Length: 122
Image 1: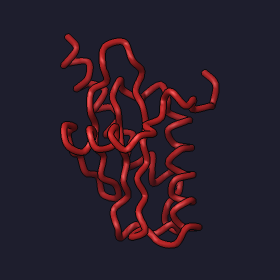
Image 2 (image 1 turned 90 degrees about the vertical axis):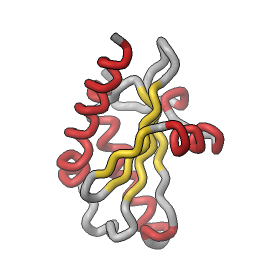
Image 3 (image 1 turned 90 degrees about the horizontal axis):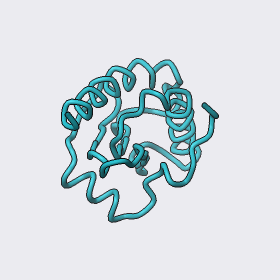
């Protein structure tokens, strides 16, 4: 599997983010809030990142997004068939964010979301 994340696997429009927020389920980890909405039948899961100014200046926000994108690229096989929006909690600082932190927080959550998506499809 290539280590790329195509445009069709990204949430890009405001309405798509709003749908995840309003109709999706909200899950929290220690450092992130994750909104998940099942994808229409036959579609791949898509990813959206919402990193606000509460997380710091532009350099810090970009670092958080870069680490999260890297995590999802490396673990694409664990991505469930859902639209997922990841938001860091406001106390999370860019200096603390690393791939190990993202894996410890998000990998178990992706597993439970995948099981939920499979259970809902059956």
